[in-house]
Image (tube, rainbow, N blue to C red):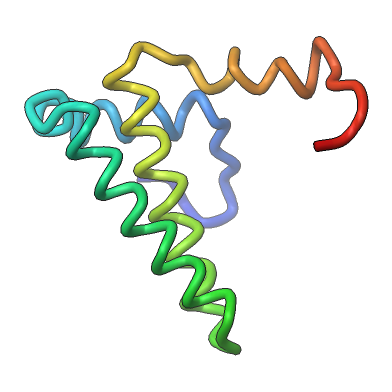
Length: 94
């Protein structure tokens, strides 16, 4: 377990999630995992409407963890995926 002051990369966090939950996540599959992810997004939406900063942090962490899970069970390396923004550069706005 990392100490609070240590910085974890996206890759390290994705690998951590894979190591800790990978077998169970793979058994659950994409469809069910996506439903869990969406539930967490809903909880984040509720937290954002409130004033509890700690709750916001917790919900952001949950969304990130479930996003990593979805990426893992679909063979997506999030570090490579974010190269769309960091290396290749996105033009314009959405």
